[in-house]
Image (cartoon, rainbow, N blue to C red; front, top):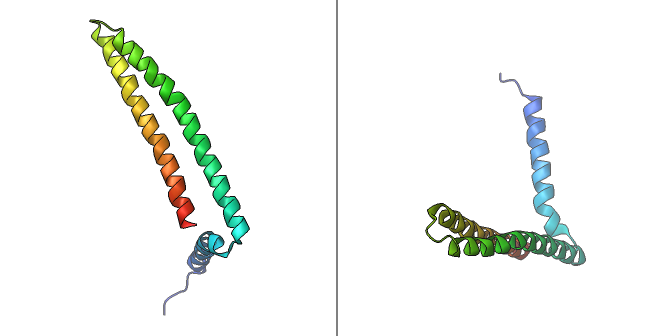
Length: 108
């Protein structure tokens, strides 16, 4: 006869409770609460996009300046190109944040 592991059963029950709470909460929420959640998610997404863009765009502008004034100095030219590349990555990251927030809002 197999022994029943109470700890394992408790872990499964707690995990099930947490998952049901997380996934059922948006479905059980009232329309006003859903709209409030969507608004808060939009605010967080917009804030993150603004912060990322506020760092990436001036960094890219400085990279362009650095690249253009490098002349024959290949080290400065490489630094400028890296700054420009990293700025594009930052702007793409901000776009990804906004897209993810919109996707999550569509799922709610």
